Length: 434
Image (cartoon, rainbow, N blue to C red; front, side):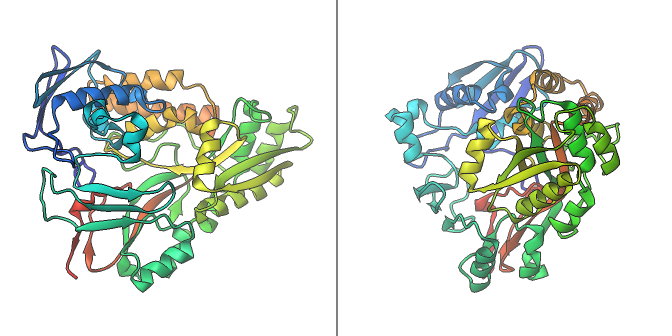
């Protein structure tokens, strides 16, 4: 993607074109592209990798319109689609479309991912799950050999206070995704604030009591005090949601129906005649390492108590949280999401790939709408589909947006960073004057 997230730019492919009559995208790979071990990147590697993308358990549907991938010569790759795809450039540039060596370079899949080989600006020297990742410059990178730092250490630190202390002491140069409640721990000139692009949400498992009843789900939506979440969980540095899909992305459209608002009396009426009429107990899980999520979960618990729904909070370490969320075994899941590529269909694909944000809501129609979006003839028709999806999210009340907020990174004044609205940036585009 371009540094500001406005579209896509050349990477491994230096140029590309689409032939409408044959529904074929043709990419020309850089002649000097090499993996970190010096092996050339060829079209055969892309053909092999595309099969991995298509068979991905969560986002394979993003590449479902790829019928065949051809390699007429080592530098040319042809993607023949079953139908036109408005979003193809964005999904082909996404991180889930990584290019790996054909047949994993002769290794087993497990061995390859233990010591991965890529063709980016940096190579992985060492890593541990949930711990540090050590990167150093890839001398075989096709781009600049001098842009960006010579090496980077990526450290997973769960505690906001510890991250701020590391930053202040000089042990960290960048702290990513600083929560709104932690901004006071940094100087204003150290915060790189981006446009609103994130959605905090609570999702209700439609295949599990009590949320298999739509009236109970709508009662939850009416009971939540969204303004309190904005004030309490985000220190006022967020807005009351206007829809489920994050804003500030190309072809974004809001719902035409009014979004959920707080009405405790209406919530109580919705519970009349349901299994929750006389009270019910359930559970909400959240990532304990995200302070804003922990605060939002507490506010949701207090709000639902007012209508007789007792909620037990379970804060989990990130890996354990994701294991339960993707396993769809939690009645309520609270988390946030945004985009990773420059198109509004990207978060829609996330909603679909996560089983409608871990709620278990049927995604068949959403997948159909994603296909219709991809084959839209113009922006207006694409936006109409996004509007429909937004309205259906309101009607189903399976996932409820709690707040819209923006990403902020703490960055040492000596370092220059350009990040897309949703927070992603390229390491080799970092620069330092100190």
